Amino acid sequence: MSAKVGVVFVSHSPQIAAGMVALAGQMAGSVALVPAGGTDDDGIGTSFTKVMSGVSEADGGAGVVVISDLGSALLTAETVLDMLDEEQRSRVRVVDVPFVEGGVAAAVAAESGGSLDDVVAAAEGAIDAWAGTAAAASEEPAQAEAPADGPYEREVLVRNPEGLHARPAAEFVKLANTFPAKVTVNGKDAKSLLGIMSLGLTAGSTARIATDAPDGRPAVDALADLVDTGFGEV
Image (cartoon, rainbow, N blue to C red; front, side, top):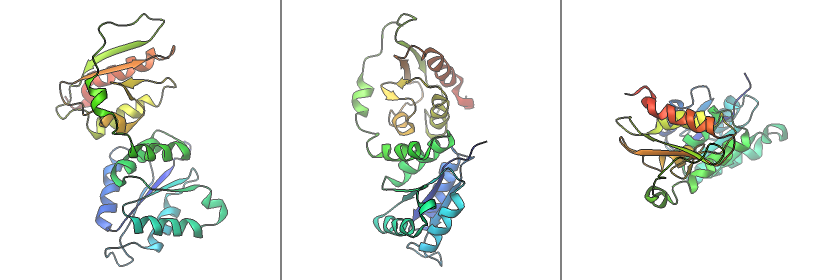
């Protein structure tokens, strides 16, 4: 199995960094997720040594994305980046994104086998993933299925008692990423975790899964069938 991009969580608090690893780990169990929280003696602050060690631990050869919670944590991460040798520095990206949303998105993209650029893009997508949520939610559902040789869509009810929350949303996105075709869910990119979660699909909501791609029908069917199973929660 090829190496996956690792993620380092830099926080002023050891507990917050560890919590992010626990949260992201629920959706990205095979990714190297490393906490680098607090000072050297686990006080509130950041540690150059912890971040440097975290980057080395997370680096399995595919690269590392470093995500920070506050401005000075970002400065510490950037200082570490400057101190790496040229070869390792080429595999490390420090991104300035929302800590929780960006971190989870990065972890899921890495779990799906995304490249370093893919994981960075997923994290950066947290900045504007929630834009246009109301507009997407207000769109009228399609009245009829399109012809087989054109756009294709299916509507399916969300059966999970808690709706499409983080774990099932991550499973959905990971499956979507196994198909080359572009697929949307109520207008949002099916391969974007934050996009899917921003829809707020609660129990009983309708997920409209659609594609314009000629080869998109298998992806739509697979995703619709996954939602219909309730992700093992019903």
